[in-house]
Image 1: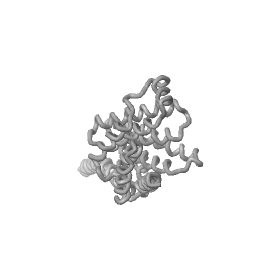
Image 2: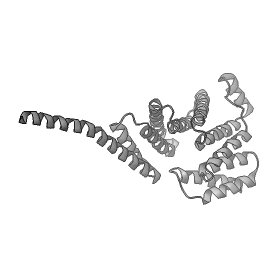
Image 3: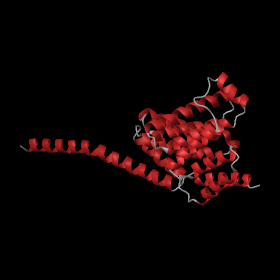
Image 4: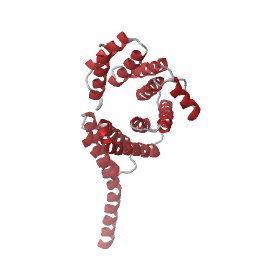
Length: 262
């Protein structure tokens, strides 16, 4: 009789452990991920990255952890000066790798695709290969369009398209012709007006984004509407910091403001 009872109790304990263990592990992952988000919000980039990488180690199929780890690596790599190019590229390549993994796990996650765009953009900035730059630009455009298809209110995607338009509109006609002839053309017509349209759309979604306001001011500056650009930059500089890169963004606003008020 006791043997039967003991076997029954042992079986109960085993079932309880099997059921409890995954739940406990999931709770630990969730807690670590939430701690990472809190550190990210507090602008503690390196510590946030450590948390997200901890989650990835414990749960290799956690797409949000990969996406946020990518963003943190991009933040770190973006701040490293070009005089330390090897170190800078290492962080940016890791950011791209994390973003690609996030997309593999969850193809419909717009955060993963935005992380990919950011890593591509930063890598393109330090690339000396014109063909690679154009191919990256086309991929960035495709990713931004995909994000909008997934979520039409995802403001960052409109900003990306605005920046994409603005940067390409600054190329001279010969460079644009080379893009069209040598690299298969570009996916849409390029103009500063188109850039402004995208920035304005992003601002309808988040009117207090320092990043979006900087983009809008840059477009107005390029269009020769200096007074509008100055007013927008002054507004951006009065806003509180809301994201890890906002201080750098404000610095760009200050630099552009100085240039426009010389």
